[in-house]
Length: 466
Ligand SMILES: [Mn+2]
Image: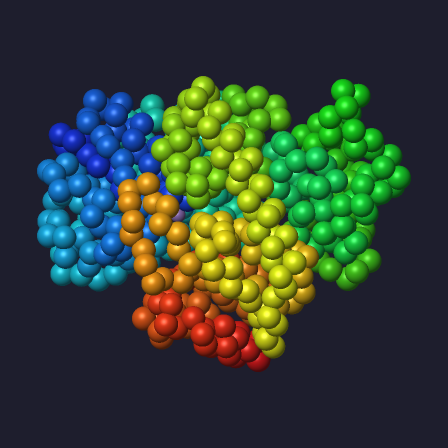
């Protein structure tokens, strides 16, 4: 089969290399990808270094070392092959492991890309895992981190669980013993660490009338309808993982009833969760989606190597630092959300927007936008514009660039909203670039274009909904 054959070929090329450089992206999937590849390669006693970039573009290409190591581009590269060519990288010194749309260039760089075989729900960490497994059969312990990457890249969202090759990786982890699959669990985030009433009220897929964005109602449902005390005997908040099967069923059936009574479908109420039994209970690493948040926190605060060390098993200094990053991450996002609510957004017919200038780092505005949307008019996708701060650990890279982040929700996606398409079209028109998903997307545009940008995107969104 094509993908596995390509993975085999990549594995052979890697094993022949004397040294390798991994170039990866700073999000959860990028960090997980790097951790999978770095471990697989160093186990072969091949010298390996890593470089993280927030995007592969002309300005960040300088971080790719000019040496004779094999350059492994992962979670990026497919769409930037022209940059590799401009750098003068030859066909035999590059491997691309990616799940983004590929660009045609004269140099036929070798690529392992799930999209070439129609796998849309397989992230770079997943593809990297197949390469790692071809490097050595015994690398199945890395399945756990590959699952974190897949979940972090929202590969489980649409189908309420991983499917296809990504699901095969889950099975490898189950066989290895570091993944437990929980089928038919509630489709919500934070089952291992988040107080249950917040877990329910923060969850908006599906949007549960009366409960979503309403922690007090969620508390009432638990306490009075289901008869479940939200505090434990030790004074700590109850989390979903604390519940017994009967309590879970009781809550799920009450939520289902609310959806049913509102005439909403119940098909997204349940999802598959991936639990890591080798991590402590109540640890933010205990399940795939919370682990991914930890990695995102590290990446967004320019500490991807800390996240990577945690992926590779560091539960000492790197773990403590990543816990700090996570707390800091949540605090700043909360502050940003409050800033958006306090300052108010400008409403157009099909979107609402706010420019936060340089008050918040560009790496978190998307998340803050998503959280703020839960407190605003959910029918209008939210757009946040901001300036880039020069906080890259590799040095100053950006000037005169505006980062645009947009978020909407499942309901609006079902009604035809596609933020990825909207931002891509609007940003390319002004000489920028953008991409992402229907529900969440981002773009970079020149400062000179920021004036009319919201209006242009609004026009595209209006066309989508007509
Ligand atoms: Mn990715």
